[in-house]
Image 1 (spheres, protein in one colour):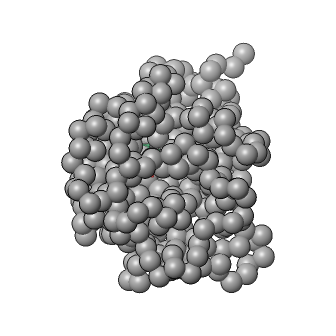
Image 2 (image 1 turned 90 degrees about the horizontal axis):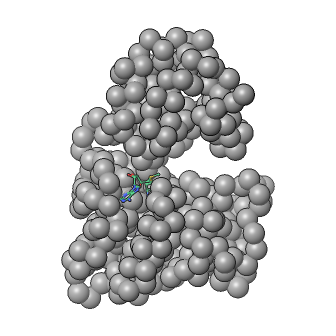
Length: 335
Ligand SMILES: C[S@@+](CC[C@H](N)C(=O)[O-])C[C@H]1O[C@@H](n2cnc3c(N)ncnc32)[C@H](O)[C@@H]1O
């Protein structure tokens, strides 16, 4: 008989790691079958048993994740006190600047200048859409010339995004990035781009084979270090109104988030939605398709099963499916 933890790791191996990380797929499958490692995980609170937390903690502590299951298992069982302390202290806070490539077309259509408020900001790396370079590529995979290429000329970060459908990337946008005059974020546990330990934690959360994401992360950290973001510690529902009240006059407030609301209960998500509807400005959400019911109800077509795609929406009106790390943007015909 399998425990819930076994199912959790088996599901992760199949639905998340397969095709993305052979290393994590193998480790997760082995954890699912290993009674002793499962028992260690079962001693943690349920929310702390996630594969990404376990694997991230082992990497953060210098344990072996790419050397195969016997080395991983031996290390985890011998160092469980250290590993569990890191798991209890940290959260899955993967900060993916690549998601800016999917937010940018919407941001550029709003009345400028913008005041950005990101809830669930992690280290705030998505607060710099005006500091990255963008390369929008045809989604057919044929390796054609970029559909559009523009951005901050000297940026250490270039974000590639495969586009399909009528994405609004007009010529004017190629000459004009959004003008951001104020940027701030909220997180339960904000990470500080100036703190080595926090940056190492962010790096530990990038899956082992995804070296392009590690390079991107390091570049985005350099961008943020040059102008560290204002990050407020707290629950998004408890702090959003107060932060929104600080937006400078003359700027369009934009509350946005990606890969965050899934961590909230349905009631807390509804509370957030009610609050944001009452705030001035606009609301951009980029979350797994079923996370916001008002967005899910309006989708013109279902996401392909098992695709892991997010739904991008402006003021609860869905406009596109997006790759979960910002790698694709599939604009809806009537959006
Ligand atoms: C997976 S990360 C995504 C970070 C960032 N939005 C991005 O797209 O790269 C989710 C973040 O949401 C934060 N978070 C989760 N629940 C929260 C809450 N109730 N209030 C504020 N932040 C929260 C976590 O601490 C974490 O940093």
